[in-house]
Length: 542
Image 1 (cartoon, rainbow, N blue to C red):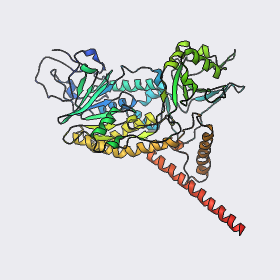
Image 2: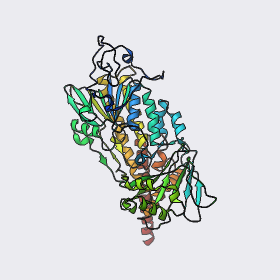
Image 3: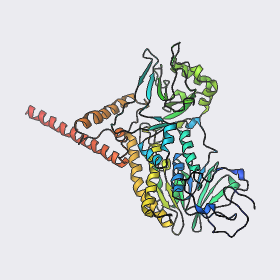
Image 4: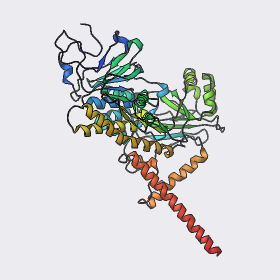
């Protein structure tokens, strides 16, 4: 008997059943980087069908899901579904989980995201690989006589719980290791989505490299494939109202800002001279420039990492007309760095190779805050299949408030709750349960996605220094709401939205409702004050 990827094969016996989940395997086993194994973890759910003698026919597993996208949202969805007994195929077009300088940013996993990590036993790993937000300092490194000034980040909410800074690749490793503990998850790397179409009463997903593509026939397709989601496009085609899946974009002062990251060594010098201090992994840094011209001035931002010997990445975030995006090679990058940061031994920190990589790396761009009004669709009458959206395919925005990954993990928690409600706790998710759960998920999550995007418009959009004048007005509004009105009349005025977000008990829709309520009351107070002053003025004249 010829072996095939991911299937147990023994001499011919009478098959238990034939599943329609997948067929058409690649002829060459090495066509994909496939990681799938039988778990030795006693807590991992096991499908008994996987342990019975079968033929080279496909193993009978029901229900079945294809998750498109192997980022945090996709991995979390795969873990959740596998925990419910689903057979899950996770498709990721990249070859493996590894460090990428273009995506070497950090996530701040707050109490919202920890709802997921707590449930699946991942919070301990998060604590080991991350830095506690209540236990780190910020160092501001100035080019003048102020030198380096250290401070503790203010805790603006007394109820704030610990969050954890963790590099993206470390979070992916954490989730991948958990996914690999499930026998009923197959993670297929190097597998690009080719098509999703209807074949008879089933939905077919094709993924892979041209003639080596594999076919799957799932009950559920989960789009965790990001801002330009291909799954969302399919949902639009199958919807009775195709425009209901068109992302609704909103304005934000941080939309369109461009960013790159430059790799720095661990424990690099933060100044010159004999008494120079060296960077520490668990400390955040803001390195300020000596240049006055806003189109040449730079700033380096570094977030804390738990891995002391790991390289650091410095964020460079500027408008699209900034000269840093016009640097052509490593030599020009080093000159720009030396001009901006003469107080730092640039050439001892940044190699020509790293500087050249920075120049050639394509800059990223902050997207406009946007959401899809719909987040699920049935694949058609009489067709067995449903599509749902999670993560950036449902809502995307700039990283102003660090809610991207947390909102995605909350999506998965809400999807799981929808399944639990519809199934009534019974084992197995039937096609009817799947469709009803998807509908319930949309009822729960669509308003949250919209509210979150609205919060992003006003949350903290001027933190990048792109408009110093408007930043001051934003700060006045922040202080007025948070430290004056809310302290004097807490029953009438709520603090700023960025503060309310720290309370994970508040849904995004509730945060936005309270923020709007405070805005209306502020407007009413200003209007009443204006009328009062006008009447006083008129009465004085008369």
